[in-house]
Length: 406
Image (cartoon, rainbow, N blue to C red):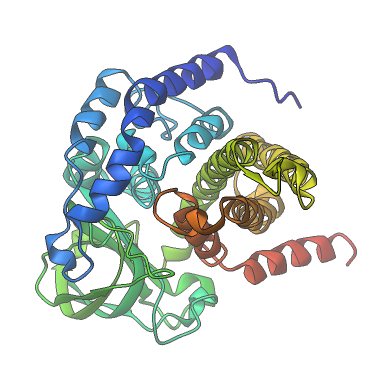
């Protein structure tokens, strides 16, 4: 196994870094600050994108840095999971950067679903505008009234009625629901209770303006509504869509989900590693530029050792994630479940620890919106629940380890 990046990957890393240096970093703080001003928490229906975002997206598209996540050489750039991983890391250094390259969650996962599982009509109607960055999408899986760590607990339902599907149920923590360009959701629900537990659910594409959908609220995470994307709660009451909106077939939801979540977890983890690198960079600059009790902060209270521990932890996390990406490419998601679950536990925890160290070095400033650290901290904690909580992934690793001895 060779972890040296290919020449193709190195070229894309250089291009993404150059784009970030020229176009993103100079306006990063301004966009953070003005996005808060543009999006008061009182009324999410009035949220709007910062006016710099769309022009930056057009520049990225013109530069050939668009849909980099998609392993298709016509619709994307034909990059493997391993080749895309370091690009996701670069994007993760800035909270809004992945959207500029049309590589943001949950759209990447939804685009992969439509790319791999959508039929020609579904791809034309929904994948094409998503790939063009014209619309945004959400994913409806987690529910407020059940323990969603066990996805088989879902209470939302899909029933076929002639040529239509009828949807009922509640979904929450649907990321991107508050975005002004959010137009569709992929809704996962119980459709075939008579089948075995992993063949009971289906996925349906649902335009968000369909009658019967009520967006109840946006949810705050540690007091932050993550405007203008947000994480929302939506209720479905006798929502009717054509049966042509069904993905693959009834009872195929879990099979689709497994294909969706493997590469997506690599993306999440590599973006987290980028955020950790940014947090460490900020911690270093702060510890070298500030003095207390007559000495620079780096010389006080074991801070030097904490910097070293952070560097070691980031390097470990990166190698684990690259190994998982390599294994997905070599043997497929199904045969890389130990590695995928392992990074989903290790990397968010690493980010949480590194950001906490950086916040401590910044003092009160670290908790404010003057730096991205507080949002990194909220994101790291949320990621220990999103796409399955730590305990579920550790359970997966345990089961796979036990199989070796049974």
